[in-house]
Image 1 (spheres, rainbow, N blue to C red):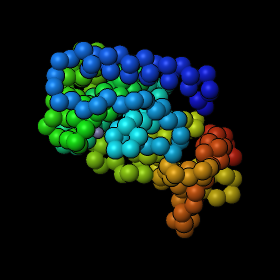
Image 2 (cartoon, rainbow, N blue to C red; image 1 turned 45 degrees about the vertical axis):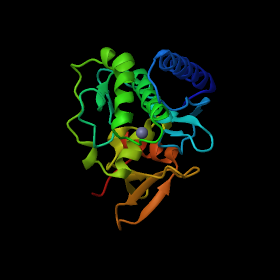
Image 3 (tube, helix red, strand yellow; image 1 turned 90 degrees about the vertical axis):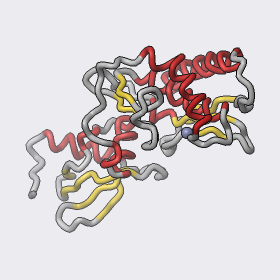
Image 4 (cartoon, rainbow, N blue to C red; image 1 turned 30 degrees about the vertical axis):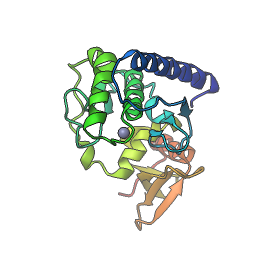
Length: 237
Ligand SMILES: [Zn+2]
């Protein structure tokens, strides 16, 4: 679980970096850059999946924090950061593998700040130029180029699997559980997806005997997998 203390520390980390980059952008002499955002919103809601820059009404950057705070990230459990398909393979502004979550969180802040620099350009030429400047300054020199993204292509992951993988560890569940069976002692189920907008019942499961779909609380799925490690669970696969 992410404690309040952790949130404060991670928020400080993100805010400090945001301020540093804003100062850098202001120090550049380039013309015709958009207005910088008034503030950075750090949203820890479990229902948030995307970060954004808004300029019409609020003029702020909002970061989906739980997607980027992944303390388990290490050399053995890499963080695959994917950019949009159209430029994911670009060597300067594309996706990469990281062994720490901090660099990924910094990257998404750069991505959103580039939107502030080129607000009417979506992911077009001018936005890419701005993002490239920030990436070269703050991210690319610090990437470990020897780390390789996992073989799995993001495009072939279903939306359900992506959502599940992005959120599961926050609740103490494991990525490997996707598509795996577990039981509650009576029935057996398979993990098949994630409901980001749910209040409590986030996990989509399918009952083994009839393929009927249900939604469950993460804690019940965890219990099911714990049970699986004991002798009690007897899958009828
Ligand atoms: Zn974007």
